[in-house]
Image (cartoon, rainbow, N blue to C red):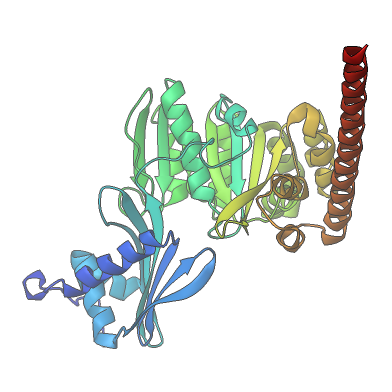
Length: 404
């Protein structure tokens, strides 16, 4: 039986399991995978292009799992035994780090390693909407990046912080669990705090951040009511707050935040949220024709209509506001983003329909787009025929003139 006093004698460890781990992590990187899965009692697997695939026939035994946990955690192993799971980061080399969650399950120890490139992404390199540049330039307010687990929220936030760091002169504080992308001071000062290691909780470190002269605060995740309320207070008092939520679209994001507060508080929260919310970026990863993945992105940008919708609790009107505000405010729905990806030849029709918010609506939009494209091709063909006929006619005239 494991107890809190279980210790680890590092001198007795050979680190052979860590060597094997590095081999499989290198293999994952080679295959451009996102996650490595180690589970006691089965073989090593990885998530590649969104699917779980086998990387080895070797079975991880119960003893192997415990040994690997001791090699990775060392002095933190007793904490692992007590808490039953623990988050940390693991560095493979100068190009890749991994966010790790290691945990006990019925057969023993399991761990998941999420790939984090050491090179910082940019908004352009990720193919994200250009309007995100404008959200980075906001001096105060709340900007949220949302989506399911593994949709690239942290990578998008890293691209935004990277832009601010290069182009502005500010103090940035990040509060994460654990720290994933590591930033070097450029035009900004950046302090990064890991919950559990450098800070007790998100809410506690966020309150402390308000006394640390920040301009920009990144909160890795708004997990609870206290963190959300503190983040909104920070946005109200003149700071730019960037954070994430596990919501599927902008409409649900607004409803989730308001719904977390007691009923007698919700009118106040609607007013506050309408005031501070500057933008919501929602992501879904979709499969590309080239067998990779790319992000379909819904974007909400603050404007008078959005403020009114939030204050009056009319979240069901958000999709219409985003669709109709595209030309003026650069907002867009998921379905508009998917249609753009299809038109660019990056995803198939089937993938667009599968990933859409409204499958019937996007099917109609795709039909219209395909019909227009076919009509344009036919018009172009007729124009080419007419041009060829005119050219032939001119040639005939030239021949007649020469004979004369």
